[in-house]
Amino acid sequence: MYNRKGYWNDWSVPVLALTSAGFTYVTFLQFLALCHIAVGQQMNLYWLHKVGLTVILVTLLVAMISVNQMWKEEWDIILISFQATAPFLHIGAVAVVTLLAWLVAGQFARSERMVFQGFLLLLYLGVLLSLYLLPLVIHSPCIMNKEELGRRPAVIGNRGLPMLAPENTLMSFRRAVDQRADGFFVNVTISYDGVPFLVHDPTLRRTTNVQELFPGRGSDNAAMFNWTDLRELNAGRWFFQEDPFWTAKELSQKDNAEALNQSLCRLVEVLELALQRNKSVMVDLWRPPAGHPFHSSWINVTLDTILESGIPQELVMWLPEEDRWLVQQLAPGFQHVSSVKQNATTLHSQGISGLNLRYNRVDADELREYASKNISTNLYLVNEPWLFSVLWCAGVQSVTSDACQILSKVRTPTWILHPDEYLMLWITSDIISVTIVVGMFILQKWRLGSMRTYNPEQIMLSAAVRRSSREVNIMKEKLIFAEINNGLGSSDDGSLCSESGFDGYMNETVGSPGHRGSRKCVN
Image (cartoon, rainbow, N blue to C red; front, side, top):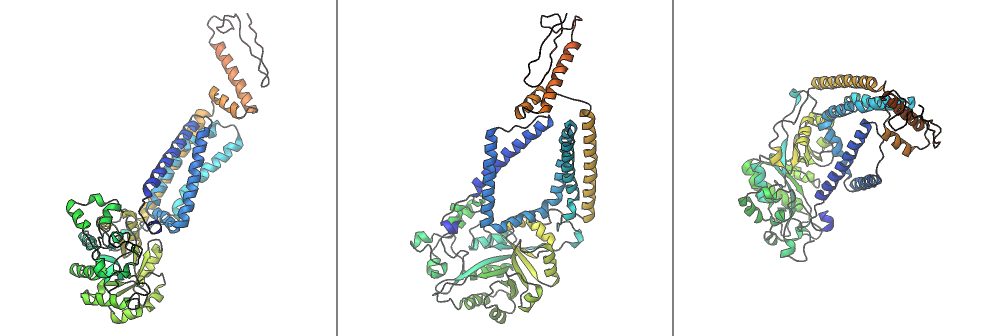
């Protein structure tokens, strides 16, 4: 959004607020609907609620279409999240559908139409049976023997630790070291006078005050500035103005002062820190634009800087695909990593020993296959403990993260279930569910099967909806006769007349709908 508009505008807050409001409203209506079903009343939705539900439905469709067009790959997170939650969602779904048996059994017992009873029973049993068999298609890497769990994945700080310091600054990388990051991921480009420095975006607008110091050059490529100008830019103030991760308030007063005075960082400074603390560095390189003095020699300049820093070659992970053969000749100790997913044989033939992929580009089976053929995998961007746990169980070797301070606290996967334990949990929950469902159906059939309750309010609602329904007329007749019988049974003086001042009984002849009955009082 920033690259398109040129300014920060965090839409997540209003989106989450609207989503929460809509979800609460629909959940409330569902609760009321279940209450109506429980007492045997018809559901007549007020027109205002119909409008509200329609608005929510249209908004949902527009939002889904927008997400699908702009962030289509984000849908994969839903399927991946099921790997972490499916076993527990399954148990919860079985519990909810089991409790619904009370309402379903009540509707089944009240209904006098065989077709409706059959449809309701088949629908409910179909849903229930599907849930019972759902574990057959649930595949989670966390359902495994604990003995098969691999070593904890290494955590590589993406541009340092951007949640607690301005990204790609020396402070950010120092904070990553403090939070036990195993390495750094850096984006490198070459200044106009040949100094490799760190910046993620093509321009300096987002992370510096370039428009303040150099008016009119905010849209210029970052590589078109001399280092003498670049080092004058402030690279920390924006972090507090925009607060991209909502974490700026967590910084101490000392850290605030340090962050506010950060400047752009040279590649050599990060290499020196990595050398001191024995951290690996994954290098990604942006080629300067045409017309740049180092447009053709950008690989050589960066490579010379790395080799002259003194960092051991085995700590460097080289990502650029361009001129990889040259880098392999000049720095044979580098770990070569590719962002292009290929089979292990092809990767080995190119001298590549690792893959750097987005977390949704590879599954557990592929991870194990790569590992068996000595191809390491690094997945990005992993900021949540549950996702880190799933990938750990799947066998990934390392992850790139914005949240080293969070993942450093994850010392074991969130959960691991032995296959036999999950099988026992599955069977036990299904047996308990079947027992409860059968018991509820028997109880509701016994409670309602021999009763015929005619609620006046229910009759009026039915009549309002289906005025010509023959069943409504029959129910009216039964209600009237029931009232007559009650009157006969409650007479105290032995007469056959209700307490209306007449000596006799009230007899109302029931005719067709709309036909007025006659009344007689007999002494």
